[in-house]
Image 1 (cartoon, rainbow, N blue to C red):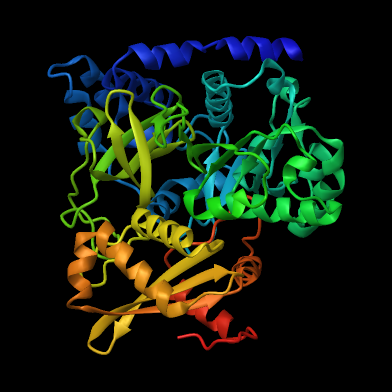
Image 2 (tube, rainbow, N blue to C red):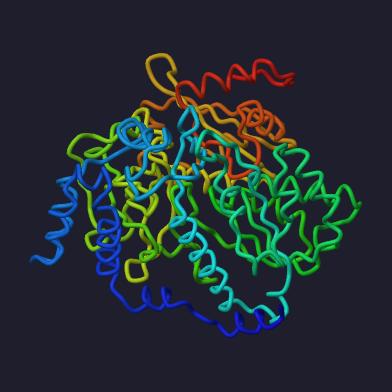
Length: 520
């Protein structure tokens, strides 16, 4: 396998990578939508929305005519609308509904705002696309200063169980479980924890099995959600009575993470390692592999434009969204040629899994239009705007990161609830840390940083947003709640903002816990 390391180190680039490098984003996306529509023109969805008629406009002038026809003919779908009108038929065994053939796999996802599990269709074409983008990210490692033999080391992927549940004619499970069950033979030499442990359904048992095998592996890359990997590394260090994870995995150099911003977890991770890690971010959602960090000196991720996904962008403004993050009628949608840098957009995607003009729920911002490069700034329903403070997930993560650095705290998790405070409003923060915390000092510093990061927040703190409540909780409380909700492990993340039903469930859960401090 050393030859693979040598070739990767030299920087082999796939044809698709070159295509994206030398073709304009607008042309790549037009080609991608054309391919998707041609492939689906004879499906029930394609016939209902007259794909044949829309496809004829791809040759017309002006160049953007095809997009005007596409968005005027096909409505925007959220999950509930897409499932009620189309996807439920595929789970009932019907074929050729939104994508040719029968759908064999469904990824279960509640996102971070929905109350119940969503069934997201996963086609063989989507699995192939995810695999291709994963290889492109691996090849980007040639830009890092790594020795040839690094590429022969093991890759630990901490994901959901590959033991999928069968329902009638289809299988359902965590996306990481579905894709891991389909890994190519050449990758199996590198892949850990291996097929047997990957099939384990019980999350606690899976972690214990990995801990027992850990000393036999030479791991160079770890992949997964930060919270769960941090727990795993702590278990390994405790089990073998070592000082850092590098005492057992000396070649560990890279952590590939996604789903949540890493910065709030950085301080906790740094306590577990003996040398710095390279942190690489990915944007792999249940609906597709959207972007990945392609360059070592950048925090942003490169949007994948030519691998089975067509993107649209809705300016995340009061004109297009309600305060609860609901999309308004006649919202403005843009193709990639019309977006601007440093503005927030809600993401619409059309994919090779039969997803059409689907509001994925994420909010992104372009930091570069030429590549193009993006960062995730939040979720459409995970912004706090009770009274016009417009506090984004990006603001929250950054403020917590700054406070943890100043007070030398290892903050493992946090969440926020917006609520009434008399005739005005308040934010209640729940901070997960096992360190001793001065709550008044924490409140002051958090408030100060949020004011500096967000002018709207600063204005409302002087007027309608009258209170900032801080609740310090043991880290384990957050993980226990996720377990009770059936969301332990895999790709599951603790939501940064809790609203309505979830806020009520969280507070009911806390009332049952033997906590030292009363919870507001």
